[in-house]
Picture 1 (cartoon, rainbow, N blue to C red):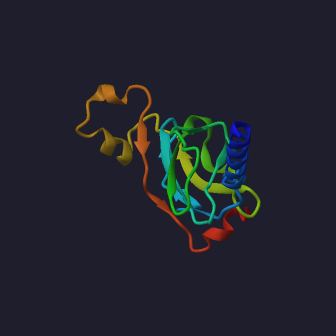
Picture 2 (tube, helix red, strand yellow):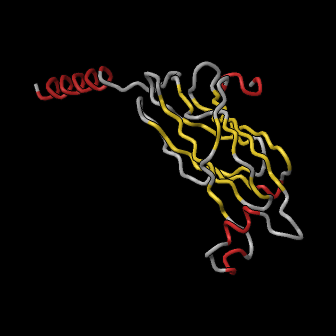
Length: 177
């Protein structure tokens, strides 16, 4: 009688355990990149452009970001990413773009890989005009940023956070990507 009770209990436990198991696969989901295709204002060569990108999960499944691949070695990810972005939620990614490695007009993209519809990748597109600093005289921008600030702050490199960018009307077809 005792063996039968133990076997019955184990059988019930096995049936309950297999019947309520969770799903292990995550399907593809739709994402929306806020303000994709940015045109940043010109920046001095040697400064660092800090960019804040927001990716919103619009799909029915949670978003799992597998990998982030910048198209240029001058772009670095500065923020920690969550493991999972639930549906209806957003994630903010912070990137630093080192302008020492570029000059003139620089157009780049950052690929975000994950369970993203339709092809598993979202592209963050931006461009910026990088101008060389003047050697003889300070221009208006340099004088404006130095006004009221101690001189020792401008020794070495500066991080200027630029939040000014323009989104064109045809941003979906930017660069044909």
